[in-house]
Amino acid sequence: MGIRFIILCTVSTGLDAIAEVIRNGFQPEAIIGLHPQKANPSIISGYVDISNFAKKGYLVYTNY
Image (cartoon, rainbow, N blue to C red; front, side):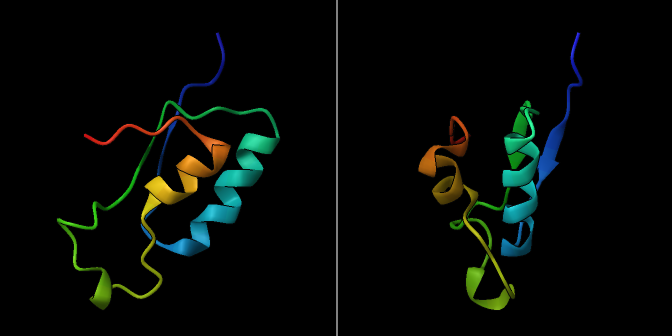
């Protein structure tokens, strides 16, 4: 059985690290981010909508 883990990413500085983890063959169970309609992106420095990152081919994206 492989390592099971989730990632919490709320700001853009975490995207490179996530991409590197995936490139090295590890697949997270899930990535948790802040939903843009529930957070206030304009007041969060470096805010990132993780769905955009996921849709670029890194992960399967599901919005809960």
